[in-house]
Length: 638
Image 1 (tube, rainbow, N blue to C red):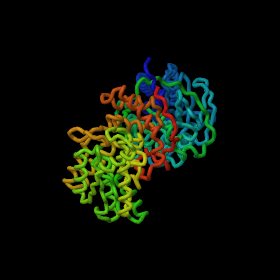
Image 2 (image 1 turned 180 degrees about the vertical axis):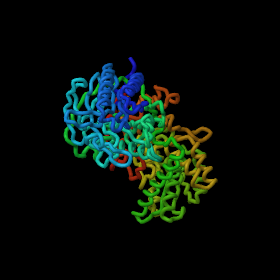
Image 3 (image 1 turned 45 degrees about the horizontal axis):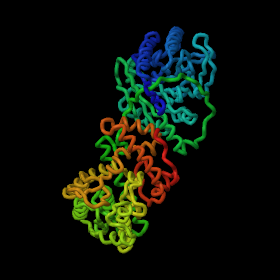
Image 4 (image 1 turned 135 degrees about the horizontal axis):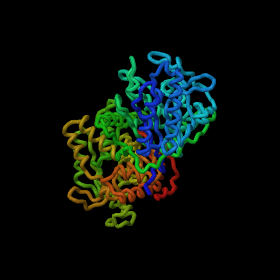
């Protein structure tokens, strides 16, 4: 049996702008039925058509024609009958006349051979090229039970939540989105996870950009998925041109956009992640605590279709922008956040000098660059940064040379303090065999270095700059009360996969040719704690990623576990898609288990973290972003 990915919270939806002709319901329904057939073939659970798609938005005074209304009812009945096959729920726009003489611009929800409900347009524009009130009645506060001998019984009201399987959606129509009090804001607080908008928005210069931003930011504000379908070029008449703009956004991100100005119609198919949205709503206390509207009617609207695969891309590096221009902008901002946080910390304690342990590795190199930027912000010389390199039993010549060259080309004083003798004495005091390279041997070096840094800071009136990154904190890959500790850790919010991009950007945009060459060398150095002697030709004995797994996997796991609250099963599936061809299923499963075990067992280190700047949406600071018991077991990986 094929996997049904609805179990991970996915729902497939389609927006379509068929080739509609004004005032031709009989012809238009044929095109709508073609869209329904295409949706079923693509395992679409929810199909959205534009505003007044059965008649065309530009039918004008013909809306009041009895002939057009009869033809519309016949077309609607034909479409309702076509949904009896099940699977795909249809949202289609049509004028709807009621017994009290009013005509509404409505969106109707069709499933399983019946009309499940209808929603009237609340805000009727009467400015510029729009004059909806000429034909349609205001839909505000309308709540009617419709009993039609041909179309059946259903409710006409805005306060309705429609359920497709486990998904809940609601409707707002075109201008409702642009209004100062959009009904969709109430819909989401009533429980709608998706908002569908059948629209007829004509094209003007730059209007598509505005529309796109409006849909994107609306999905962010409401923590929802938003599907938008506007009338296509077939509606173009007199002074107006329609482009058939199709949009889908989820929690502030545009996840799909159709091609505009296609005379033969256009389609957009997207997969919404409702599990992600539910997690964000539970996480966001502002959303949770907002006043809820009056009760909504809950309406079953079909069971949806099984989803054997998902079309949305899964990026393997969620912390790193895919676009080079965005990398440039993000790098500037992240470095500015780091440097400003450190500078403010310095100012609060009397602008001390800075002391940093410079190993020649990637993390300490970024912290070193940030420290230089912080001094520049304060108008202080680079000489106020004391870099300390402390070679020990496992230190390689390559990283030691990098530390020396970094300091030299940055104009920073470097203090070199070998720790061999101090570590040997300490191990002797413990009665520990120096040839036993266990955790005691390794941690003795880390704690000796931390002791030196803090005591040097006392001696020189300094502040110890921490270098450990977010990925190491997630895994607990640091020595408790060793490199785990600092006065202020500038890298605490930066994951390993992003650090390399920041250092590379700095080399390209912010420093001399000589310093850039040193940074390039650091970038090609294998990641290693360098705590065990007897290295290879590069002086490297321990390759961190050989010990605990690839950081690109761990950063991926961290992002989806903390940011989205995803289950281990879903993370494993996502990783399989993201790293297809790079890491096999057994590797992913092995290191996901390792990540979960380490993440839960090492919380005690994060509970006592020093302060550091938050730079992204994922942070493990115990003071605000991530709080969990030190003793919690990891979830099972089924």
